[in-house]
Length: 457
Image (cartoon, rainbow, N blue to C red; front, side):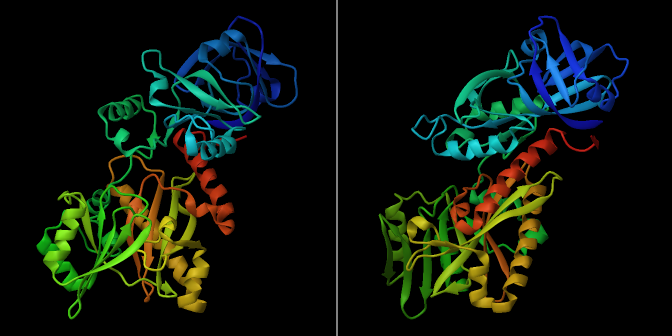
């Protein structure tokens, strides 16, 4: 097996001919061969092989070849020799999402990020975007969106890809029978798809329930707790977080507190305000929760409260944006520290929270020990990612871990997100980490498509 980069050109001949520069023929050990099997995505064609008198790594495809395997464009791309006279162009990488036509582009607010991913790999791979409606399973093709040099979208029909990066944005869509069937079809065709679906909070706790390495870093969490269980947890921990299993952006989260002499308190977001309400009895607290949610609290989780590190009496938690790299190992691509707004239940910016670097956040509490605490947290984040992957039935390539660090330096995981947002990379000090994050996505696509390893030439 050997791997190189070549410059693909299109020729006008209608016959099925592949022209390779002599240096490529020599590197790929094809001397004396009269034909070659050329592959793109899931399409393969047998074509005549001709030598080309041109220096450098050049490959010319006749129109008969180009049209048969639907090569989308000319330019630099990787070329993999699998032996047995088979050459593979690519990889052909598909980003699965949905269209929302807005001034920002056909993929709404995701358009900028998707362009970033495509540009990162576009001189080494064929990168495109597609939606579930763009697949023709009978023909084994996809009507994909490609990006030209000017940053504009154009469409091409290509074979089914070598690997799929799932960025479908809707929890509801991902639980539909049609999307589940679509993903299963990729698996049956041996096309790796990673970031299978969104997590529910209760799913993650259930996954890790029997994993000793992970349990050491998980606060007690109870799905669909009874009123008696909530009361028991409040008496045990003094405060708990009560949150929806499938929520995001901190919506619907309560911080419930019990003071033996002062009663019960609920802190939550109401409209654009952070509110704190006192209740004389536990029963009145529960009546409020039932009334606000019309009795629908079965999809909630109660979680042990942890005394986190603080600045100005405002707690801080950390988003670890984790990626699988080109060696299939978990790495923290970026870490953002989120300081809660005064009186807020969560650290989300829309609730008054603010973003800072982890060094800024930790040095306030740990001083010279801040870097050692951060390195320990990174190690825990990797172990937690490995534990989630170990217990999850589908392929993962990216995780957002919401971690807390208490005043003793212990690390706790509150949530794990399979399709994390990228807001931490808006911080000026974290922009390079944002670029690294995108590079890891592409590197992992190379790994999954097997366009790595072998003898690099």
